[in-house]
Length: 351
Length: 158
Image (cartoon, rainbow over all chains, first blue to last red; front, top):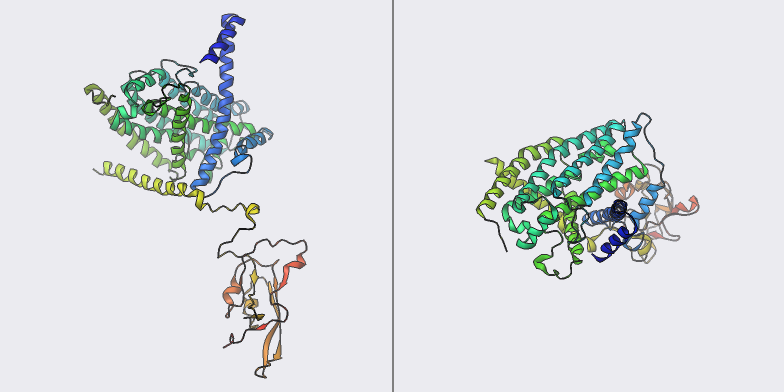
């Protein structure tokens, strides 16, 4: 894009190369941080409105037009709140935990191709990096639960560990199924394959659809959302791992949950639904509209996750493990074999 | 092979649940039960079973259906109802008869349990739909339900 190119050239003409590239990275990081802090807030608002509509309510519609400023006001309130903590908490870990969660969430954001040009960080192990980053987030949750010195927080954190370690497998394997078709882990190449031969969910038809279902289930579990919200299970554990957090530290956990949801939906958009590609190439001539298509698809998938949340009851811990180890994992392995066979025999649909 | 039929049934029931909530989602704009109260004060209509306060309906001849049997007073668990009555000569028959003077209702003590309305044999009292009951002096919460000069509707006691 022209603007970014101009800024890039201006920076490099101003200072030596190393400093310029560092300044550039910092600038991009700040922009991403700002955008996704705001995006997270609006996802919270979206969740509340959607939840209200599912329950035949209206939702917050008082602060600003249709409640658009509601979450801003909430965030302002949280900033002004006192940061409390337990007396016997492990202070260092207790303060560190929210940053683990929010930093990993924001790191993963940098990988997504919003358009062909608007792509901050394109490494050749993209998918692998995403899976790795999303599992570091759980360390923050475990630390938060452990260091709070609160039994509810500890139980919540341990459940989170069990859950994330189990469902990580399914997320990884279902993405691997799709990687079999693209032959690359790099996100830009995955999109390129889809540009040539149609979205991967169409290319891979049956196994891709199964992989998508498994991915959405496991992804919902990864983000600790209902029906897999044993981690914060309000009715049993208070607020779970973040029971002892208040003010802005609580807001970090809260925001990270929603950004994680965005990440899970974004990965699905990129891998299954052709990222910024428009359906049937309607708007191929205007590359900037890619942002619209990317966000549109992502929001649809986020809506799907919200639909899950307001439909299904919470699973018990043993049901959670049975679902993963007895159903999702064997199905996923079978699906992987099926996909490998299909790719080998050339049974994928190509346009 | 109950393994695969289990998966099939699981997916089927999940989709059934999602279709139910999906229908609610699509109808939420029209069917929302939330009332934006101070804004729609003029048009707001409470639902039929809402318990606002106890009232005694009077017809156009200023006649009510209360015979003064005091069953509501006895049924009330916290003494919100007091009936002041005496025996007066019935102008039609010439016999002495129990008649109410004042049916006093203390809204401030009422818990809206509805036992008085269930106990009333002649359906003389019923629930009103109003809900803006706050006043600046608690004395206003003591109400006389029968209007001044009202009398018993003929035929209620038969």
